[in-house]
Length: 151
Image 1 (cartoon, one colour):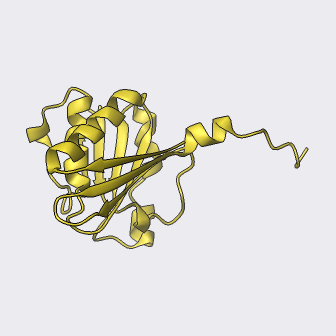
Image 2 (cartoon, one colour):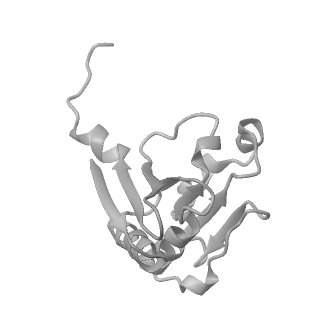
């Protein structure tokens, strides 16, 4: 499934994040892609709010790498300063097993794709306009025909 949304402000971007948060169950991963200043952290603020966490608790985890909000309801990861080799040492695959939802900024730094993740690509549309493309790989995988070629 691919959904395209347009944001005209930081509040719009946060609202789109909140909408997605309400639609996802525990243990899911959201991969965020976009240039510096695209609105990834604003999206996570809204996402946290959509999970019942006050948005003022959310800050960019650039220096702490992983922030935990709502007692583990949301994990906010920022990979901006890391190499793929350093990312491997974080144990990110264990976070969804704790029952929270994991939002990963700068997901292009992951050493390998995370299957079943939701990808959010935020593009600058000029001024305050942002274009968001949301792809749910798990839903796409469930909607696809089964592959029995290896049997």
